[in-house]
Image 1 (cartoon, helix red, strand yellow):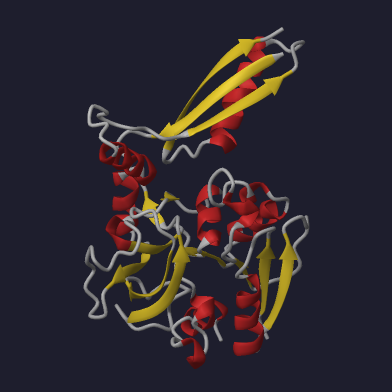
Image 2 (image 1 turned 90 degrees about the vertical axis):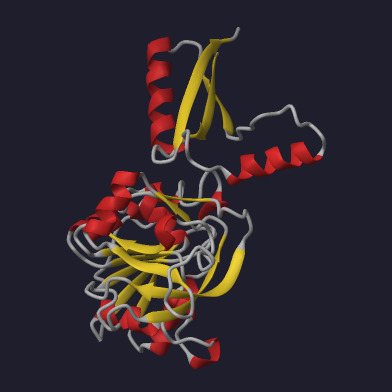
Length: 84
Length: 228
């Protein structure tokens, strides 16, 4: 089957209070070498293996835009892997 | 007698407050509309109430936007009929693109439940006509994702077209950073669409309808929109 791994994260320049808080927590634990933290969402979408990869890509892109991300504040990337 | 439809999603929790506000306080007709319904009866206005539709999974309002009834709600709005989205209802309207922008997590990350002051920055809308120009009102808020964000161009357009209806302010009406409860750009608490018939707001007018609730400033919003 196809496994599509989707990462959704805030667009650059949009303050993500959660990532900032995690960053502060890491610094208070003494990990001062960490310069920045991003915190987003991860999804895995499974598709049947008899599908065309181009179709998988088209649907994945569509659902990322329509539901999994909010284009006003978020960007998404995904990669498709075929597993046997 | 006016008739208001109140949408109900799994996880809505201000639906009964809105129903009560219309039915018991304003003595008008109110009816619940289940999110899986596919037909709308006649309504003078629709309320998308607050709460945690679908548990706020994914993003607040993200899943509710695709409920079957929402296609009818879009038609209702496109026909120029008034729709008010309160709190989670505002989040849903933004996800549906009936209003521009997004509501992200409060800048301090906390769930904030409090009374706040608002300046009515536009009293020439069908939701605020009962208010005086720049009237200072007090309404409760209760949210964790009320931090209004939009790109610079959108914000400028909202300002230019006078579509920001409420801004967070202090008791004297000063729009300050300290009076901003969630980090919203320009202290935005509520906006309307270009046509002026869809309002989204984070504060809860339906919870400020009777003296026992310490504020009756919500009454004017419902009276304005129902023209009663």
